[in-house]
Image (tube, rainbow, N blue to C red; front, side, top):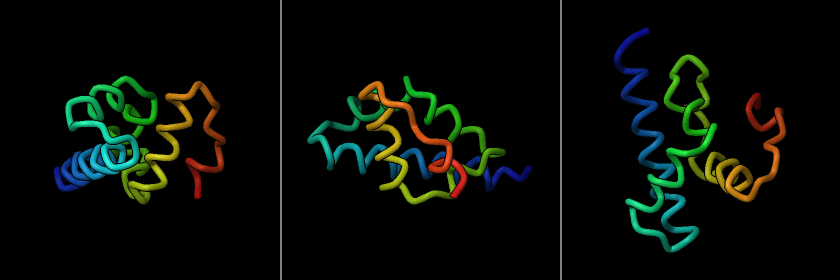
Length: 79
């Protein structure tokens, strides 16, 4: 795959972190720290999953679910 997909996945992570910052009044370090410990993060940075193409707000909802110990429904991964 092209480097542009890798860059797009990284951009999505940044936008997702910003969304989490707004939702929870976290600073960037806190948002990235919490995000980087999730399975969602691992799937986003793997550009082959194409999860990075999803709306950052939807991804933030998925991250919130994971951080709250809830199972993220499979249909959220495959819209």
